[in-house]
Length: 240
Image 1 (cartoon, rainbow, N blue to C red):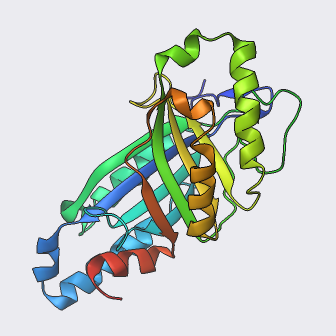
Image 2 (cartoon, rainbow, N blue to C red):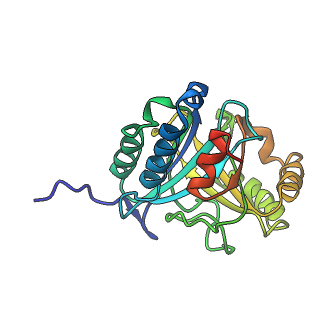
């Protein structure tokens, strides 16, 4: 017998859970003595860089791009409980009482049912693997219920056009988290790229597509800059 949960799998193997945890540092922390602040920063950095062994962590700064949010922890793991272990440890440090988490999204990886046998490099799979590009663009996504009233064949036909537009921007990699029944949204979407302008052009190109007519929600949107854990903390602490 074991108390370790079995991994969720599909035809591609283990399915990763994915978590986007957006955090902010309360301003009253900055009024603490300098020595205590430095100790808090070092402690948080240690906790961020020593996650559970099966948990992948990527850190991003939102300072200057989103009001009320300072950083993002992008977490990936086939074991849901690893998220609990990791975030609970963050709260337990000297900075724990000064951290807010105003936004959080949760989902699972899986291969799109609309791809069929046709696939391109970088399309979503059950296992979430970041490409470590400079920027990450994240938002929750919900389809109108009318979308699900269409036949599967019609939905696939519409999504073919959607995929064809996306293929014109191969430098942008999509990661789709499926959140049905797990979180408030249906999907949590993340796009990696090295150019905010290219992502802007991709989103604009998708606006006239038939699939876009069935969008019910795609906000709030987060523009995130990849940084080291310590750099993420320093920017939030006002130490540029």
